[in-house]
Image (cartoon, rainbow, N blue to C red; front, side):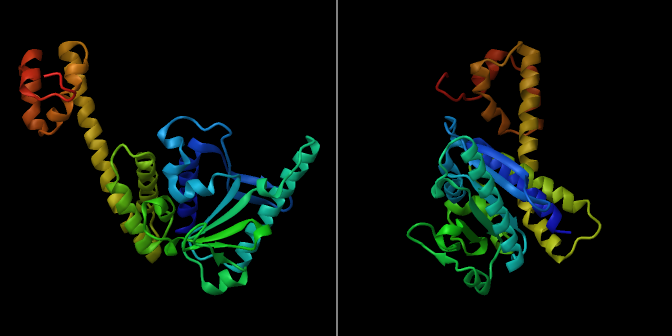
Length: 300
């Protein structure tokens, strides 16, 4: 049953990451037989001025998303037939774009046509060679196989990508040890890192889907274990957020508001256990609380 939950996660995950830098459509219908592009993307003309809207924040995935593209993720190694199906969808989308350009009296250049990225957890050497894939490490890196120029396509073997921060957001879509290590890296990121929280929440949702299933196969069980650290991190984060909300509500009830000076004491208060800080919050006056806990921002 792995394929369906993984497909859903991959589409939601890519949509979550890419929405900040452009337009995303999941399940885009294409002409011809009933076919859908897993994820279609077009970058914003004017990027938003936020940390998460910087393509660089997404590393190699952000570089891929600097031009219109199709993203086709695969949990299992794609077959030649599946690659051909992806190419057909690409050609149909490109043809539709060229028709729209002609109707609007615009010129359609090759470099502006959508690019296809096949995101495979792994890809065999015969598959890559059969489609003429070549690695150009001066332009991209190991694991990214560019097909001949005019096909505007690349096969990404996620398990072959170097384990560096720039590839993290792709390696989350990997399998086995590749995915396990990527999830551990994600959990270890600073809490304020762009996309960390939303990615953990999506991984948690995937884990819960597997947890409620009655027919986990060996692959499902491996995924379940890989996502355990994300589950624990999300749970811890939820507990911490819940504790902070409880403290803020108690301070509001006692003093009417949580001003800057009280807010500066929250980190120090939350270092204590609830059993330790609750009596102090109830018994101490505002002045005593300010004196009892060191503040952040130099207002002592």
